[in-house]
Length: 133
Image 1 (cartoon, rainbow, N blue to C red):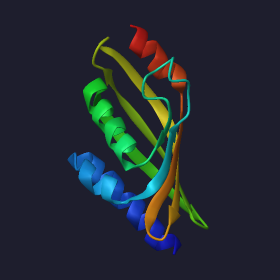
Image 2 (tube, one colour):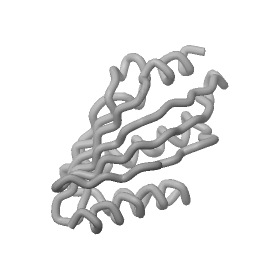
Image 3 (tube, one colour):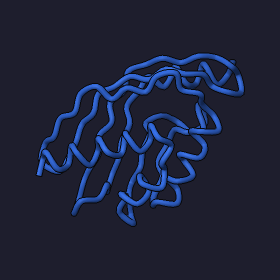
């Protein structure tokens, strides 16, 4: 199961790289719990979302708000029904034209071949500062 879970998560990063958000949305459970740690008042993409429609809106807003120069998932680790991914991204916040660059950790919870949960840990100050300009 661990290898299958890692393969699923890797395929989702591949879909993101191609701009194929529909593939990501199709891989979500109906009650997916999607969380980007941080306070929404500090940066609009922070906070929890529930369900595929909210996650689709999240990805729409990511595309509207960011120009990525790097998005690199580097390590994949599976434990039970979780896949932990360590990576790095860099880019520009479009409205301020300020750059961000930080490492991140993503934790996917998988159930019955679908993503039931997602949580992102990153340097929230990078985004809040870049957003303020």
